Length: 313
Ligand SMILES: NC(=O)C1=CN([C@@H]2O[C@H](COP(=O)(O)OP(=O)(O)OC[C@H]3O[C@@H](n4cnc5c(N)ncnc54)[C@H](OP(=O)(O)O)[C@@H]3O)[C@@H](O)[C@H]2O)C=CC1
Ligand SMILES: C[C@H]1O[C@H](OP(=O)(O)OP(=O)(O)OC[C@H]2O[C@@H](n3cnc4c(=O)[nH]c(N)nc43)[C@H](O)[C@@H]2O)[C@@H](O)[C@@H](O)C1=O
Image (cartoon, rainbow, N blue to C red; front, top):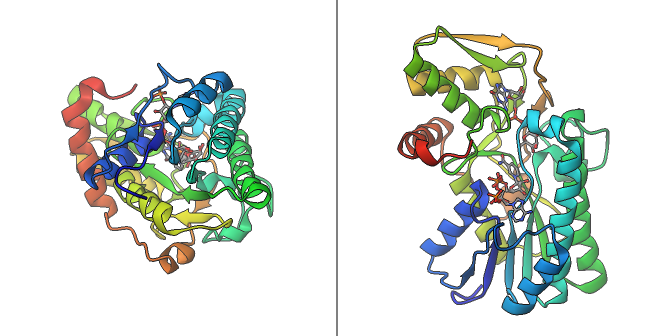
């Protein structure tokens, strides 16, 4: 990937797209194509076609998607399935037809069966039923993986698919209903501390286990693998360690300095009991996470404090 290559980061205002953009800029890539949803709605095939005709990106990072936590996934199944299929179909097909050198597609750990053995190996894809709260999103992501594989087999298009674990970091969505657990907890504890609330609500039982990767680590892995990995097989991107939601809640409480109690709302879904990535393929490709969870949450909390006025949600 030459420093002056035309690189389209789709979704550059999001958590992941923002981190990939920062990473590329820090490495001196100075020909980034950064059209936001206001000027380019990726659900619209004609607009995507016009964009690719005009700009002919050589590299495409597909980090635009309809994204949300367990509640959003469960509440808007049609949006998660249809919009994600539209975005990825339009972008992957246009990238191929307009001669892109490479496309990097991002899936998610939720593509694996709900009760798959742990840690989750890449070959467990399509071996069992999905978690019901996010099966719509997972089906779209699986279709994206398969589209990349099919275009590689039939047309020789160099599309790779990377599967990040749960992510967090600067630029996250801090909406209390639609975000993922980590930004939601940061905001809940911070606001409860300011208001002097006696308790903070943790959704579900606290027993599910999740793995969390800082988005700057993710961006590092995505850029490295885009440079070095060419293959049909998907690659997990994670840390290889997990934590229970109860332990995570205690950790965020400690970092934010909230003195009150934690209570469970068991009317909210737990989702998948455990999602721990097997990262042997990733390690064999020469990449390992660097940012520890406590350090990463502390840094994200500082970012939240500095940007509260413009956080999403
Ligand atoms: N966050 C996580 O924990 C994980 C994320 N991933 C994957 O990483 C990718 C990025 O996720 P993340 O950064 O967290 O999500 P965000 O919601 O933070 O960002 C998504 C981006 O996509 C853009 N977008 C959405 N719809 C459209 C559209 N119709 N046209 C143009 N742009 C659009 C959004 O624009 P706008 O701001 O205008 O809405 C936003 O910039 C996704 O593929 C997701 O599946 C994978 C695993 C975990
Ligand atoms: C990345 C991944 O993200 C989603 O899956 P998820 O991992 O289940 O997502 P989550 O971060 O929202 O929740 C993790 C756990 O945490 C608990 N929990 C406690 N308290 C809060 C809370 O306040 N907010 C949220 N959101 N969850 C909470 C919550 O009940 C659950 O047990 C997918 O839909 C899918 O889209 C996907 O790929």
